[in-house]
Length: 383
Image (cartoon, rainbow, N blue to C red):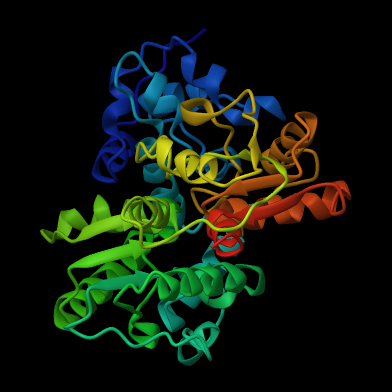
């Protein structure tokens, strides 16, 4: 075997793109062990890291687009390597040199929609608040206590419109002084950033920050864990600081304060799925469970892979927009895991998870056997 000389120019580009923690890797392979891809096919993030250390990564390959940024591997790495950062850096290079793999090209379409309309779903900006029609949802003003930021999926996706409406009904019932920005808000940008489109992310972030500041926003309640990640952590890079909490945290606060009273019962067996960006990335595990435990009649069963070991739905890292072939969908596995423990309801708290699970119900032809619900839809029906 001939010795390989590291390609210095490529290494420099990886460093500039923020992926230089690969230098710490000593190839133990723990990342491969915990990567959800290896439950559906052979995949080695360790190999990608090793190739990157020599500047030999094939940026035109499909493998650099597989990472869902679930957070399992950096959490388990004994050397502090963050494969997510490396993966995003490689995607930046692929985007820079226009060698995006075919299955990842839909992310580029989402990027175009984000640049033009502020959302990845090709929805008209003028229609962003249409979901709120007839629900007594007021525009946010400087005097409003809470900004409800529902995210693009709640605003445009027909299935997720139901979650937005359920949320508004809950907030109205609790007497919360809240409002929405409607056409003034744009996508948080978290997921498009993970595809390597840094410029698009910065454009969206700066637009939102300006709107938040100009509107006098102080407290933001979000439905999407991806918005939570962006507003709480990533926007801090722009030297701003807003109070940001997830809807599950806010719901529990309302219940504990007596502003929401559980008056109904729900005679069902359910399981709760921990979204990666709510759980592993932001440490919110107990609040959703405490909410569900407060519902009379509801039996909660845990899947084997729960909390920090929860199985990714497959939608993070921009994968929600990319093509995943049949037989390789993590969400199919998760729906089957929920069915295996006898759950009637698969409950979660993330629009990506719901979208992925709803698709899997159709693919697996189990629509009549298990329902997928956001936690707000459950609470709306028992208050």
